[in-house]
Length: 256
Image (cartoon, rainbow, N blue to C red):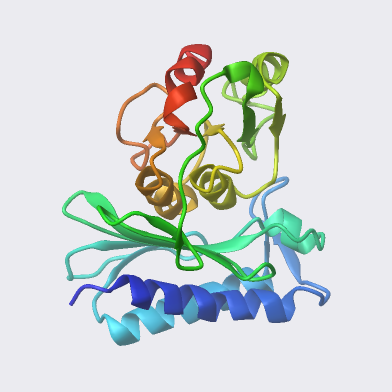
């Protein structure tokens, strides 16, 4: 049995309640890398999601940020990020979300990204448009790079990788209205979908970061690819460029 968009929304709201309830508390922080941290709330949210998915949809194949991959016999793959923006969350910066996507037949079909502090639920079902709290959203009508506002992110191993993104950041900061860095790839993609940003790119990601937001941006009319222009932005090595149609080609040219 496949989930519906309503199922995905319910799961996101349930996990979002865990994030909201724990937000103002002191957190138990541990480190997966030098600056890649995780809190007890990440684990609580993910445990809730996996338990609910396995209860409602037995034998599900789940790819999750903290617990890795759970093989299942059912067709389709779940991509879940129980807390996208953990560094923000641990520092009590109110920019974070839950991201859930469901894919089958080789593409993401359903996606929900929920910001529990703003009560903003971004959703999409392939072929049926993108929505924010039930109302349709659309990519911006931007056509000029100089007047475009962009958003990006940087990898956790930025000090020892060639793909540190700083050259792109410097170049585009000088040729656009500005480049923001919010700390949540899922919200970055959704903000492009809602026309708040005109473009988003990032070089080093994981599928749970962008599976839902990528679909939502696509369904809102954005062009979404890997940063080299190839259509697959889910498979390793992940990268993403999501932009308003009027500036997509110009951004792609700048990134390559």
